[in-house]
Amino acid sequence: MKYLMDETSPVFLWVLMPMLIAAGAAFVTAVVMQARAEAEISRQRETIAEARAMLAAQHRAMADRMRAVEEAVRRQALDEFMADIRVEQRQLVRETATRRRSLVLQERVCFRNIPLTGWMEREIAGASGFASPQAAVVAPSEACNYLPPNIIRAAITKRKPA
Image (cartoon, rainbow, N blue to C red; front, top):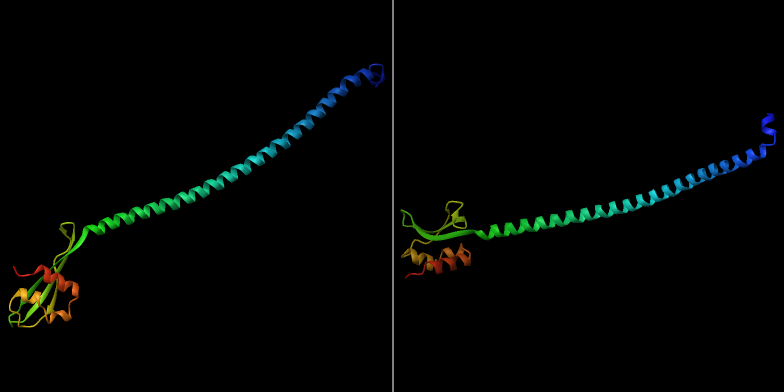
């Protein structure tokens, strides 16, 4: 103990005191720098969260746009397909063994020139006094009550006598 109290004590204090102050300043500096780093990290996290929210919104908007484009393409393909489908119609007069004549409407569905179905028939009973098949189609007096006007007009234009 005598060694601590002798004449070298003030010198020892003068050497040790700056080291203690430097260590304290380093500790305070480290704490301040840690606080600054944590503040910067929190700012970066906020920025990243905003960027993620913006990306998620853009992702949802892009998905909606993609669905709309797919729907438009699907609709356009369906419209093109439906434009290629048509119904062929033909009309004829059928005479039975009892001399009863009837108007027969035949229809089939075609894709471009390829028939998809066979001929489907609808028979409409007519009068027994038709002179010829053309007369039955051109002047279907009894059949007019059963047929829509557009079918009658089509039958008249297709079956005009030559």
